[in-house]
Image (tube, rainbow, N blue to C red; front, side, top):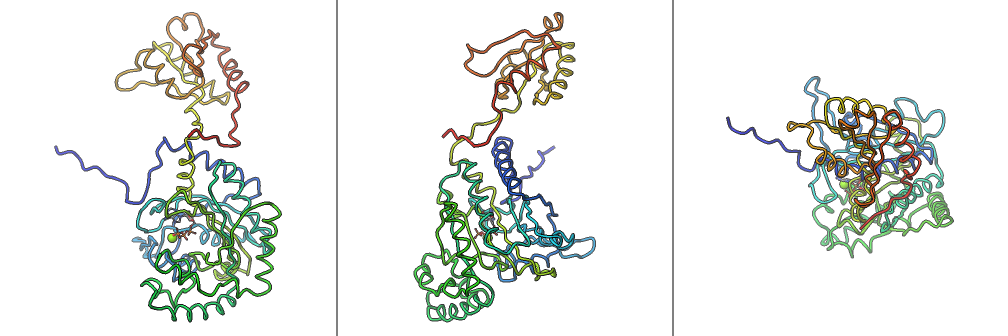
Length: 445
Ligand code: ATP
Ligand code: MG
């Protein structure tokens, strides 16, 4: 028989392996704790939605809708469906469908996989994870500032340093229209400098040309009319209000007049958190206000603002800072030899778990349970604080050996503890002595 063909993951879609899982968990726990501390509530929406939701919410002339969506026809009923490329459209759909924002404003957050058919490269994948927050029903700059400060707190708690905030206001539709006319005229005067993509966007979405990464266009784009100069009184007041709160709270930022967002629905405040440590894909979090969207999707006009973070990029940034103090796989590793010892170990492991500790019980592989020595190697590798050892002598005496695995080999203490006292002994040693909390991450470069 020939060897069966190996099936591998789809290009641009990554496995998160157990080695990286603690880092993801640390990041997710820290983020969720902070979101909760600001009063944000979790929402989970389906990964698949009707294609027209994204087409309408995100806008036709955007990278996502033009070329990045995984869309398909449901073969059962012919429905046009899409794997979500971002989280805002689904969140807004859910808020409208369940009337969530009608009894007052709502602060929500989500996390999960997003799908975009992009050319896979560092920091750019076809399945990637986002954390996002959305605040519905708040119109002032205070909530914009809150979302930004929540991010700042997250970077601080994660120990992420080299990240900066870029800020802009893209005004309202009328202000953008006036700017747009002048912008198109400017680009037309410099048509010889426009690349193919810019030419295509010239009349459909000229604002996006400002966002170009083409080095040959930078200087020309730098001289283009600035949307900031077209803002009316209200938009300016909103922007000034936001900057004032950030200044008062010592949040540093740079105003980048060329900052626009890839999605059509944004207005007024837009911001990005950017790092230089990740190469070309340096934006780890992007957000802004999207006041028109809810009405555009058939709801009652409701102001809205939010952000989305690219989780892979933040994980890579955390990795670049060094290895965070790795949590062990468990608190206790149970080692045993002999049939009765195995029975006792199995039951004792359950009792230790009842007390809230994490226990890995040594289990048989095709080559058996192995010697004490090989089991102890596994115990060491597990990162457990203690090994509980039960052999034939211990069974005979009704005791277990409890061995500390922390510290140098020579200093490791071993005590004999009566079986009925093992749980209390471990709880005392582990919960009593150690500091379990991961308030701030420490990295060991
Ligand atoms: P870009 O200009 O890099 O394509 P975008 O405007 O498409 O970004 P958003 O839709 O605002 O990005 O998504 C928010 C964040 O999600 C980004 O800032 C980034 O951190 C992350 N992100 C977006 N697309 C990808 C991707 N294909 N792979 C990994 N992360 C991504
Ligand atoms: Mg993109």
